[in-house]
Image (tube, rainbow, N blue to C red; front, side, top):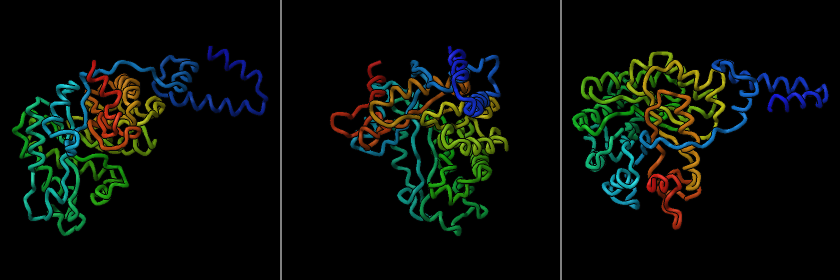
Length: 356
């Protein structure tokens, strides 16, 4: 049908427009130049022009980001119970931020009390815990405090990540550590301090140093690489950061390749040289450590459309961590499964998970 319609269009358009339309078709074909197999131009244009259908979510591979930092949603224990028993999710990604509250001066000992509470309560509910290790205290902006070789990235590993590894290595429910978060985000001043926002090589140095340290103190734990900002957005810059990171030996310094997916730029998965082709060269297991949509009525359709789609396109994906369990933002823009807007506190995805 598409071929027939396109043929009629060619017959009826003025000759002046034919080169423009032809170039458009060539461009659409070019999206698929690698990996199109025996697909016809009609199939290719169809695949690009329409969004994928909604399909069932594989909830056995679904977790959530839960930071447990807002008591309006209940105590840490109550929130952990809700994730495990109400939503029946088994995986939780928690944030261990190194900041002035945790360690106000270079010489002070880190205060782990809040993080100990999270690990204790989540472990008690038999949740599998992925700890993302990130953040810098304000004193890390002063290069005089970079105690390891005058290098801020190695200092971060030695003064924070290593202490996290050491402290929780013996907890069986802490299965994995993710070293940093979205290193390419240029608006994050911490990325600028560490000089990783525009340098995947510098982030790779930090990851490899952290991986080596973890082998000495927490060898049974999985090391997850930091995911960049959504790999399907800001094309091709975000993907290029991943390509440089990977081509310089990243898979020697990780157990799990971290990935973030937001938005609906489906075409960037299937275009020639795009995301599908990139992950064709990734041998490691993949966890999507953040993915979701804004608005209490948008989360379920997004999950049913995007998550089965990326699992089909990237076969290495083992888990997807929805972003996020609770967020004190208005219901029309919240990423939270729960929010504080009266009358709209639960999203459609929350209700689906609760009632399935």
